[in-house]
Length: 199
Image (cartoon, rainbow, N blue to C red; front, side, top):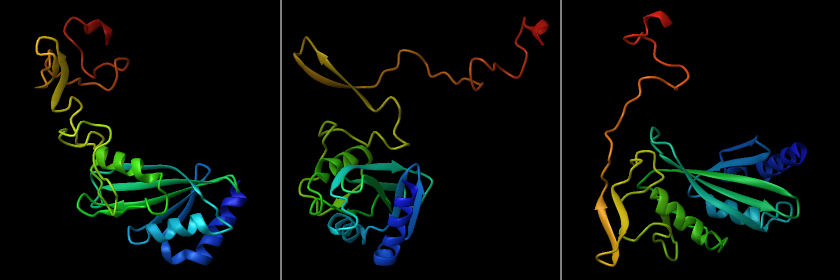
């Protein structure tokens, strides 16, 4: 498998090396790192080239790195049934910088890009219908961003008296507890009152 991936990486560097910045092999997949300007041309080549044959798009997903200037990675997963190989193509982008849509290359990417928009707020230019797909249309925020609160902002429930779904602010029944140790098995690094003999 790694011989086939090394051979493919060499072939891609020789033919279309200008379209990507880096090619690495990790976890049994070849990963190409490119830019938003080159993503459509690179994916078109990977699909149409006879040696590559990556005709199936498996997924388009987002990854959030809040500490980076280009906060998000858009990751495209492709499959070549002819070669029985997978390839991963990554594009780094920020909150304001949109990524070109690949719906013209892979029509199946439509809902994948909508999901990345809905969960992370990643914008795609040229998308035929970029709107929320998993959350409610009135939903505020992007739930898979690392800075999104775990409890969310609103609670949704069915009100039997009003016979409709209602939105309410999140109400926690218990105060937030800050545990001062890593796990219940390690315990604290100080002696609790009444536990002097345990030390």
